[in-house]
Image (cartoon, rainbow, N blue to C red; front, side):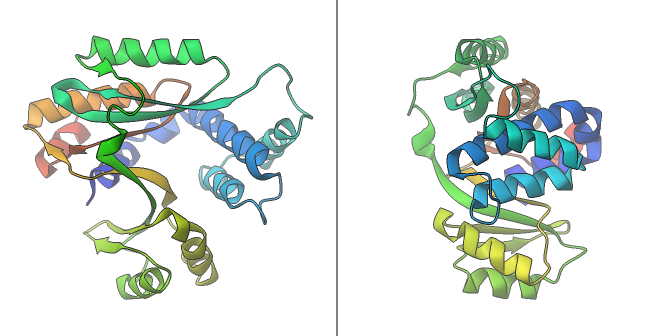
Length: 251
């Protein structure tokens, strides 16, 4: 299981999404707004928007909330809030590289919050490009292994241009070039195979493995970053061992 998959599994088991439903809806709303402003408000022609709406529905976001987000994107909703996407790079404790994707209407507030949290935890905020070279952007899909047949997903993925398909006891993970994202999504959708997670992610070229306690320190820092209101995603090159995963789940 990849580091991201383990981290997602931990959050699901701890019930973080349910405990912070309002925060989840805020992030989903911002993603819908940004997607619609970038490529139009029609999900049939704007794949990023379709993905954002699918994510919102998967989180049981009410239809009225989704409709309001679309109206805001075309100027019919709240005025005075202009969202922009910003990416910050830096290091968590123990030299682990992190990339923090944000959507904000106040860049100064966001960078101050990210810098403060990293510094407080023993890391630091870096310059643009300081760690991005350690990652590559890729399309990723995750499916529950208990629900879907690996061979079927493997066949669809390979024919759709995927680079890698792996399975463990809980998930089937597909990694593909960015340009194959829409093709793969359409193929899975046509086969009635619904991913638990799907998106464009930053994948580390090489993961960093630490001892359990140091890993937990980094994971707590990542968790803190994810709790900031303006943060959409956090990527790192941390390798999460089974021992560290078990320890984090028990906290």
